[in-house]
Length: 351
Image 1: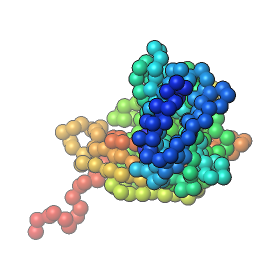
Image 2 (image 1 turned 90 degrees about the horizontal axis):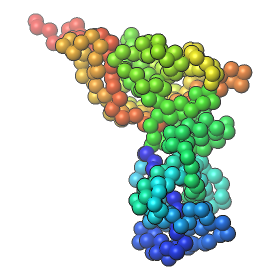
Image 3 (image 1 turned 90 degrees about the vertical axis):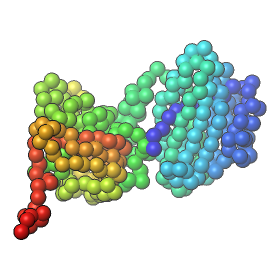
Image 4 (image 1 turned 60 degrees about the horizontal axis):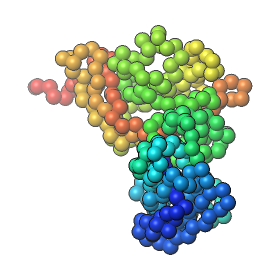
């Protein structure tokens, strides 16, 4: 599920906020004001707290807060709506932590929320961890864009720490996939899947994920002439995907590779063959046959789903890398007639 962000409340409207939250949550609530800011605590299906720093108290208002267990798309979910009462745009980092009753951490959430003057904005967060009973949110001003913030946060996650709820792991699962566009880390740097498509390859199928905007019908070869440092994940499937298909792979060699930069300064890429583990689900697969009237290279349909792919690195070489997220209506591409739909001998033949 996708996330949106927001934060803050005004001291003079604190009682009004409590009333609004009572209406939204339908449960008891309490608030506490600390030196240096305000913390608003809401008791719903899970406890949700929002901390507003002193510099934002007069500009931001918490309109509503909800905590759900279970949620609509996740085992636990939280949603917060904020209003910007100032005369200028508010750009905020919304950072949240999931915890259980013992204050043990179960990952987190962090994103940038933009609120125009006089307007409201909302964000939602979710987790599949059943032990969670609390969600704590801190707000602060920022100059980063949403993409800059996600990229810098993902790239600086400590090893094996669930900063956004996902990180490198030897055992990726579909339950951990966040509802965002494909994002991850490639050799210590943020990696975003900007061009995604499926194509038949020999007698199997291949998924390509590129970190640049390219024309799938032209392929990556032409793009590399202009930008040699295009990074690409290649995943091989044993047969044609279909709606409802789930592919899972334990950490091992083969099944694909990562065309990746050796260093941040690299002007080109290297073919990195390493151990790979993944969980990939195809939620919708709409493919039609190759049509001679549409030209040699053509789109043959669309695919949607979600994935979590991890590449095992080493300290002496390329760092462990990964990508996770959802993809919607990405192209299925033909580079010539793949022969997938030719009549089979003995079928549809006249006697």
